Image (cartoon, rainbow, N blue to C red; front, side):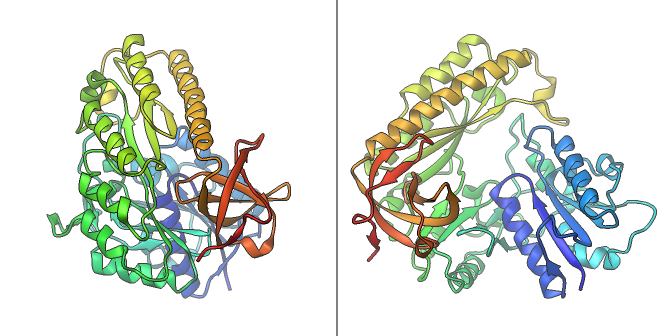
Length: 439
């Protein structure tokens, strides 16, 4: 029985796809093992958004060959689609598969027999037209369920459409079937993932269904306690969805909404499909209906043309918004994007300074959000995440909680009262009398 190990870089979507490909191997009689267990085959799922994608890919390949020198190494994922030839020249790589090929790698790689030349199986991104269903199982307490792939937007900084192709989706019926299958494994929470999740409903180039209708249908699935929406564009997060989430049985009050810039000037240069006024309206709507909701924000600093004044527009906009945390990205040049050709390049030192300012702001926002919720009672899903005698989990509104370790808590939903913020920045709960079963 050949042993296969997986390594995933990047987003929740990549994790869902790696897990699904892993099950394909197990169904064919391969033994899935950890990276360090001398595998015969390594599958490395790469990301193009991550900075230094090439360095990270090379490092993982080097480590794989140290562990198992005679192993077969295959590279898949966004970076593999964008730079297949470049990856094929990395010492130790046996095969590179693009977006249209990665779900067929067992079929395409001839029993993983090593040959002298690296196999490059990466067709043009226009060939990636099929939606491949994927979800993670047994990897984490939560499951990442892929409902959409690709993107029809053309943001000036982004290579994702080049790496994943046009927007395409699963059907509501198929998503519901996957959710029921996941429920049968005793998973308590599903995170809905995609490249542009709010654009759900396009099948073979035609819009057949809506994301709002998917949300309505999933809310009726028994056996799953929580559904969490991953990143969703502000122009696609409609009032209809927000209003439904505020009354939902299973959708939690947590939204992650990319902003990218708080300056309308920069938003227009980026090619984003909204202005900051719409973003402000979405945040206001959520907080009016769900005052305890968590709102996360993606923001890019150092985009071409971002002057000190325009950056301060972003900083001040975020500072006054009622949000809970930031994911800060330092702009980095990407080949084959419009932004590479733009004037007004921001020096890297200045980009890093701005990133640091926003990360400090993020910590202040997160702490303020946590402080506002102390003394209140929430439901925590405890995970297999133990540090220094403490077990961790997340409330429905995404507050990271620490409690005294008890093996009986793993993958359990418990009602807790939030007590105080500890030195690690997590919220301690009142123990033990205030931790009791969810009814």
